[in-house]
Image (cartoon, rainbow, N blue to C red; front, side, top):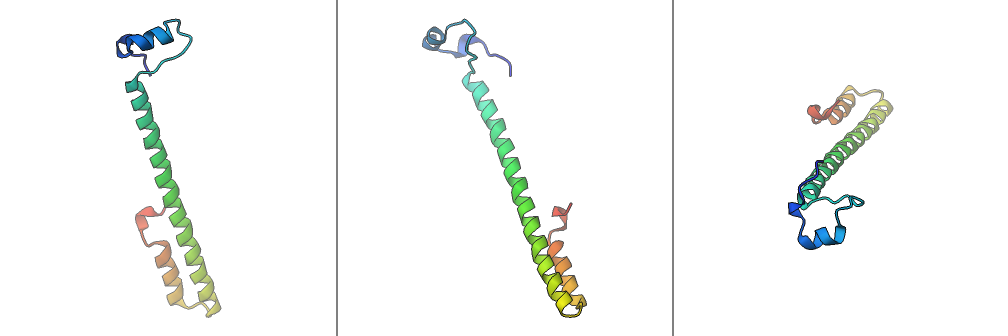
Length: 94
């Protein structure tokens, strides 16, 4: 981030913080930009985690159907059902 001119700081803020440079001061604009970026990153991670959780659950459900099909002497229809569960939304598969 680039440092904004002191014009965005109030006279009181300038007096309290001084110009010694010992404390890095962010303007409201810089803070808002950093906050927006952090929120976007958090949302991206949350969406990805949710997508992965759904895929894991779908795979586990399909395994249950596979096991059931194996207990029924490998019923082909049951294997198809398991594949349908796994591929319910093909665009989500990786």
